[in-house]
Image 1 (spheres, one colour):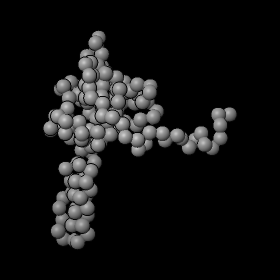
Image 2 (cartoon, rainbow, N blue to C red):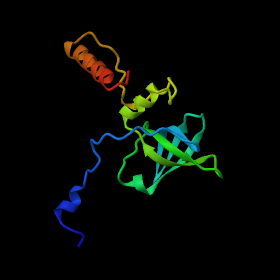
Image 3 (cartoon, rainbow, N blue to C red):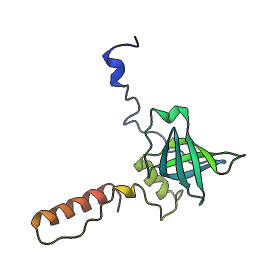
Length: 144
């Protein structure tokens, strides 16, 4: 066999560990995941304006989960401009820091798929409480 119960539990190594912010170098570009394609591939909209088909490198493949809307760092290919390789996934905090440093454009929206825009209802007290809660949570997480 391949070990007992502890093997299935998972290591959870670098969960809360603070890492140094990685900036792009030559031949690299920031991008936002627009579509997951499966088979270790995704479609990303690069901040240089190009849409690229990206391959998730083996080091990240089963350890780092990438979702639509995530900010990633791509390694561009000299011989194929329409394809790239995912080098790194930024956490929402790191993405906000990149924006603050001016690395990402001001108009870029992170995790906009989490923001709920509900029709405003004043008829019931529960509706206004829910609206306030959603607004507070969105502001807390930097979505608005």
